[in-house]
Image 1 (cartoon, helix red, strand yellow):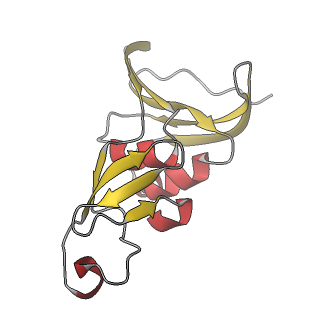
Image 2: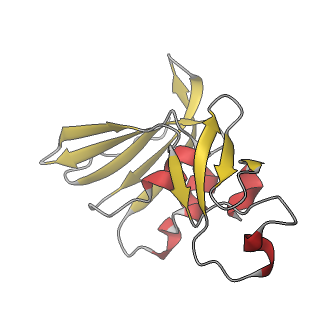
Image 3: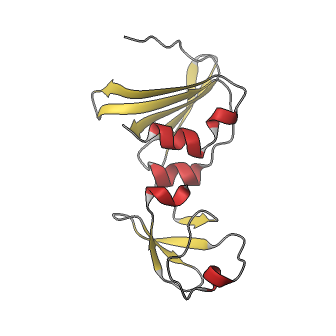
Length: 146
């Protein structure tokens, strides 16, 4: 068994669905940090069977919209002096800006430059959002984030 030491200060992204950790790691550009970052995959979990965990040895600003879209069941633990001082439970964001792309070929966002199109959550179960310009439904697919 691999033993990873306890953080004194930093963030732990926990309860990531097994297999989504690398996608989160890549999307948050954690490979570009100069801090210690550990991605653990397929960690045994009583609750989930298997899960992924990311530990970051520093406090950084995380894009909670992107995290919530990729894995709304993940949690973020803020660690100070070796103890958890705050726990953030993620959820699907009700509003996302500049992340999704409208699927309607007639939408103005398809042929004119719109800096950050806004989408509103329409259906939580299938991660469907509605475009603020044309009201067309757009379903979030993992590959949409690149």
